[in-house]
Length: 134
Image 1: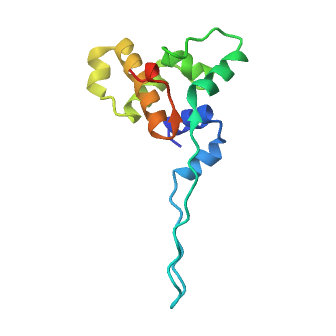
Image 2: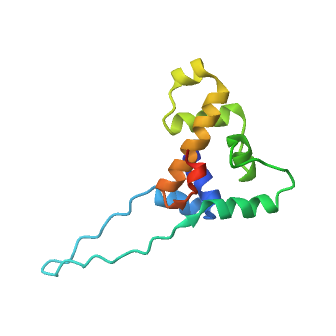
Image 3: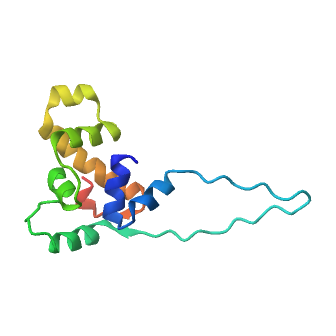
């Protein structure tokens, strides 16, 4: 399971096993010979309120975490390793280049990573306030 999938699962409130299953594609069974093709069944889309879920987690956390601006605090809040190595791994997974990590340093990577995580949460069904996206 990717680091982002793990992070998303914790924020969305899904079990890690459920998130892992969504990474897999289930085979579609072939129709019986001579049978009419099956009609498409609409699937309800669940929108997850990212800010509300994280605010709820923050209420029960003993630390005062600035998860709205800090990727370190966001990762701590959801119980993930927030070390430089873990953040670097997540940044590379989400498209930050090794060259940028080496040349720009951790502060710039952290700012990019927080924004990118929020963008990716929004792209995957999360309701993320505009102020957390820019």
